[in-house]
Image (cartoon, helix red, strand yellow):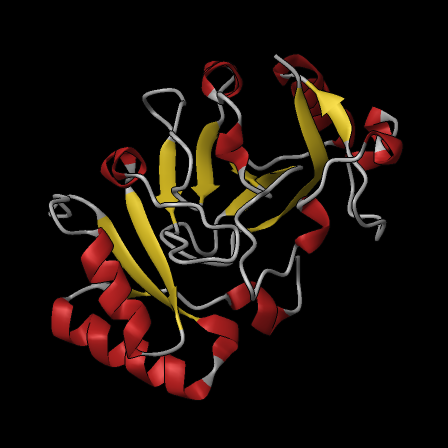
Amino acid sequence: MQYPVNEVFETIQGEGFYTGVPAIFVRLQGCPVACSWCDTRHTWERQPTLEVKRDVVIAVDGVKGHWAWHDAASLLAAFSAKGFTAKHVVITGGEPCIHDLTELTQTLHDAGYHCQIETSGTYTVACAVDTWVTVSPKINMKGGMAVLAQALNRANEIKHPIAQQKHIDQLDEALNGIDISAKVMCLQPISQQARATELAMATCIARNWRLSVQTHKYLNID
């Protein structure tokens, strides 16, 4: 199966449960969710005129909006060619779950990698059983996409971006009927805002959840 890949790069996972873990990020092109604070808007559209050669996207080169077709085998070959040493692969976007990720994640697992998907929860999650699924439920975004119970139930980790109390209230409503007892629950202040951080910390203490800080932004890394 072929996937539209925007970029592939090796760095440190900056947020959520795997914060600090060396990781290979595979960013897929295409997203209809339209989050107002999105910092990868160049992944939203998929115009054929922006397709480029495969080797160009295996890097962060500053070109916005281009993409190339890759399958699991060509991605594994690219990892090897680049000399990547991380064994944790983060499949992100865009919205990666537009695609059936079962073949990609299973192939990566079989090759000795651990996979993590970062999704908005607005599409059905299809992936290998051992894949770690991080759902950051994007509620009431401009794209009008609903957060699916299937995605929330499949999630190993629910990492919710917040700026104010209404975002926590929206999360509580979305989680109605979802068993979160075995899930990692994280609140993440949007854009490191001081008030959002204070609210997230207080809520995490009260509920025994985790605070997710975007450490990559403090470290000024990708």
